[in-house]
Image (cartoon, rainbow, N blue to C red):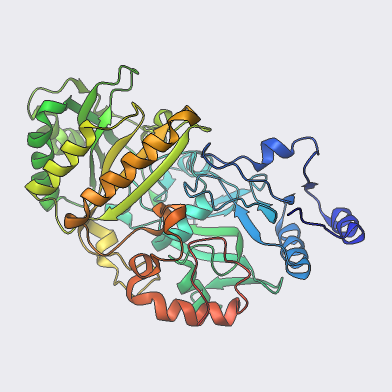
Length: 455
């Protein structure tokens, strides 16, 4: 059913807005409603393309008064498509690109529409960085609020562990600053609770010196996958903080469809130390591809970008594993042999170091044990192939359940998992999160997310 919006109220909002308001039929609407995942095809009744915090506050108040659902789009990467909606109001932060770096204080303030590529460029101009994803076109806001794993997490923790403060537009339209001393409960909840508590127009991060580094990947033929993943398991058993290793079963980047077993590596420190630390990775077996070498942090953060083009169709599932046993490895390999798309893959993200030295209740993000997170990334281009690819991801996820922990990373939850996986995502922090939700959003205005219902 079409949503009817009061024209006088809309005219008033338009007059106040420094950005732009778009409805169906307006020039630019179809482009603005699209998100990174081409599988998502939703049509908001109104898109508020905000330029500043006041625009966001007015948009939230408008939606509340007129009974509109709110979806918040930052970088637009959320695979479940929660940055948009049908028939509601999309608050689009993608025009909000302000970045302010203070190299002396080692702090950066950035608006909610900034991507990691953009933030890395500004911070690396001063030899600084913060943990931020493994795909540079991802938005900083959504990734951080849900967790924020990335190349630097072993050395410096998650993105949310480096969040110093956040500006938040609450359901009431009030604008507050959340930090250790101001709204500390809200600040705790923002760090892992996703978009449940308000819209975040500004984020402030603690930065770290990041200079010379070594990174890249090695790839082996699939028939060596069992040996490669067992070697990867052993290599990740005792990693220093300055080394990050991800493993995976991937397709060759040349489009041939060849299936590969890969190890992705990064070392943060002097090049000689990086060469020594990653030498065992390079010397194991006889890789078909070895592109590990000196690289900038900016380049490292773009290493996987080409494999995730905007507009490709995506359906993902993910779970932490109880362990990377031989049986789990064999199940992964067997399932990957049946993978129908040359763009899909299985990725193992290893948690160790600084990320594991934060207690599970110190922030809302509870998954602090040393572990592997398995991402089953289904990706394809032809809509006619959707059913086949979605079915493969679901089969793969089901097959891995004997090896799955009761824990899931909220940023990877699929749309069909929203609502019934809250305990797996938030763990022991769910009761406190529900209480904070009741205080700041008692009517659950912000519910188009991996929702935390008010207590």
